[in-house]
Image (cartoon, rainbow, N blue to C red; front, side, top):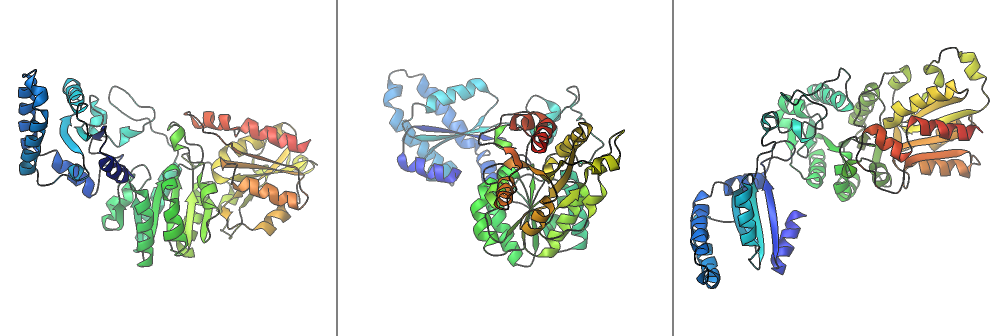
Length: 483
C-alpha cells in the first residue's frame, strides 16, 4: 500500500512531503531487502556533504538565490547521479532529501522549511534511534515498544509468576518442533510479541520473519504448505485483518494445511482503539474450508493446536492477551469436531451452598462463551450462585464447523441461554446461535458482545466494562433470563 501511494504521488507530481522515519526497527529488528536498501542510503554521506554546502552558500545570496533555484536543482541532480548509483524514491518521481539526523530538531526544521518551497513531491529520510535518551529502551528497543509496569531507574520490567497464552504457545512450538521436522514458523516482524523468539533460536532454518507484510506471510504459508511443510503463522488478531483476501484465495480455496495462531484476540489492554482483536470471528466465519477455534486454557490450547497439526486442514486458533486461568478437568477433554466444553457450575464451589441445592434450582441458565471470556464468565457464575441462581458454562472450542444438533440438544435442558463473545455482535457466533435457537422456539436468550462502535484505550477490565462484557454485566443477563 505504501508503494502504491508513492507511485500515485509521483505520477500526480503535486506538492507533497513524505517523512520517512527510519529507526531501523519495526517492533522487532527490521528484515528484508527494503530495510537493507534504506541502510545503504544512510551511508551516502558524500552527496549530503556537497548538498549542504551548496544550500548554505545559496542562502547567503538573498536576491540571486531565488533565481538560481532551478539551476542549482539541476546541478544537485547531476551530482546525485554521480554519487548515488540509484534511488528508489527518485525513480518514483520524488526529490530525495536525507538521511537527516532526526534528533537534531533545529537542522530538521531548516530542511523542512527548505523542501516546502519545492513544487514537487519530496521524501525526507530521517534517521532516529528507538528509545533515544533512555538507555534501557535504547539497549532493548523490542521490549520497550509496548511495555507494562517497570522501574524507571533501571528499566526492570515487572514479572508475574503466571503463564500467559503467548508463553504457553511458545513452549508448544518448541515441543512440537522437536517432534515434527516439517513444522515451520512464520511471523510478520513480531517474533518476540508472538512468542516465536525461542523457536527462532532453536530452529533458525525453520523460522521466517517476513517483516511487516502480513499479506505475504499468509500467501507464503500457503506455498510452504503445498511444498509439504506444516506452516504455523502467528499474527495479532488486529493485523490479520490485512490478509482476508489471502486467507480466502491462497489458504482456504487451496485447502492448504496451514495453522494460524491469532494472538491478542478479543479485548486487548493498553494498546488503544486500533489493536482490539474483535473482528476476526465475523471476518473468517463465512469463509469455506476454514476452521475457526477458540481456546480457554493452556491445556485446551495444547489439545487444539496438536489437533490442528494432525487434522491436515486450514485452521485458525484465537486466544487472548491474558494469563492462563486455573485448569478444571473438563478443559482436558479430547477435541471433538464442532463441539465445545461443558463446565457445570458445581466446579466453582460456593461456601454454604451444596451441590444438591444447586441441582434443585428450577431456573437453570446456560452461558455459551468464547474461550477468551472464560475468566469473566466463571466470576459471573460464582456471583449468580451466591445470588441464588444457577448457570453452567459451555465454552466454544469450535466456532466453525459447529455441531448444531449437539448444541440444540444441550440447550433444550436449560430455561435460557446467554451468549458471551469477545468479538463483534454483528456477524458473530452468538447472534447466529441465538437465531438458531429462535427457529426451534427457544426465544429466552441474550447476546453479549462488542457493539457496532470503536472502543477506546483502556485496561482489559475497562474495555470489557465499556462493551458490557464485565462479570457484572454477564450476571445481569443471566438474571434477566431467569425471570
